[in-house]
Amino acid sequence: MRILIVGAGAIGLLYGTRLARAGIAVRMLTRTSAQAQRLNLEGAALLEGDQTFIVRLQADVLSDRRVTASPGDWIWLTVKQTHMDDSFIDGVAKLAGQGASVLSLQNGIGHMPRLRAALPRNPLYAAITTEGALKVDARTIRYTGKGEIAFGTNDSEILPNKTEAEELSQKMLLHALQSAGIKASLSNEMDNRTYTKLLINAVINPLTALYGVKNGELPKDPLRMTMMAALHDECLTILTAAGMLDDGEAWQRLLMVCEHTASNESSMLKDVREGRSTEIDWINGGIATLAQRMKMPSPLNDAVTIIIKALHPK
Ligand SMILES: NC(=O)C1=CN([C@@H]2O[C@H](COP(=O)(O)OP(=O)(O)OC[C@H]3O[C@@H](n4cnc5c(N)ncnc54)[C@H](OP(=O)(O)O)[C@@H]3O)[C@@H](O)[C@H]2O)C=CC1
Ligand SMILES: CC(C)(CO)C(=O)C(=O)O
Image (cartoon, rainbow, N blue to C red):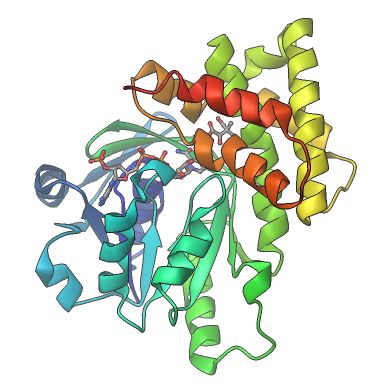
């Protein structure tokens, strides 16, 4: 089985290095030739605790025509939402042809329908990970949080009869991940998982970016807690109306994530600090769009989306 991973950033290299280390045929597809060259020459470095693992893997530039000529069985998309413009999605469609299975691993919502429109015949999977990684440089990432990955089709796409080839391909991917020591599962409730993760990102990400604090600091101030609770409640109301299961644990889960990732700067805080656009349009903006479709109000999500976007580079 061959896996092409598009986007050699924190998450792409976190999975790429561990799969390659377990002997799975992995190829990283980068945006720049400089990064591909560096990965080919020096290998990728995975920092885990005080250990450094140097992993040899093949890398090419996504736009290289030779890449399209030899597609993989699986194509993983590990770029950010901000990178998934129309030309990127066109490039993925060319790469995938009609056969490859495509797995997309982003925080936020809104990208899956666009991918489906561009890939009408390919098996298409959403993935949610609770693992954490940080990109240190073009070839180095730090493993910042252990967790698990779940993948599956979106609820609207669950078909009663999968093809045998599709089923085999899912099992092979699961086996590859597990053989690499990665906690992985195939899920038939991806909408619920996506919304559950979205709720966490929709509270922690914008508020840590606005207050300029690490995740663990967010609940320590009573006024920040008031804001967290209000945003949480609005998101929960909208997401449960959209199909998320309310197991009564959402608020506790949110506080637990703050505690477990206490020393992290959220990805949105980092984006703002480093002068990049954030994934706000697909996180709180995504929730506001869901609300609009259901004719529900979303004043807090609307407000944080505008406030964060005002911090984007002009
Ligand atoms: N990091 C984490 O711990 C977690 C991240 N996520 C989600 O995973 C997704 C990826 O995040 P993360 O890995 O942190 O992001 P990074 O910014 O670290 O990585 C994204 C990578 O995509 C590359 N890229 C951009 N455009 C292209 C292109 N056209 N062709 C090929 N590669 C391209 C970037 O390359 P370049 O630098 O050259 O632009 C970069 O290396 C996000 O949606 C994030 O929310 C989810 C859970 C945890
Ligand atoms: C869970 C959390 C908030 C951890 O930092 C995250 O996913 C992010 O920063 O985007």
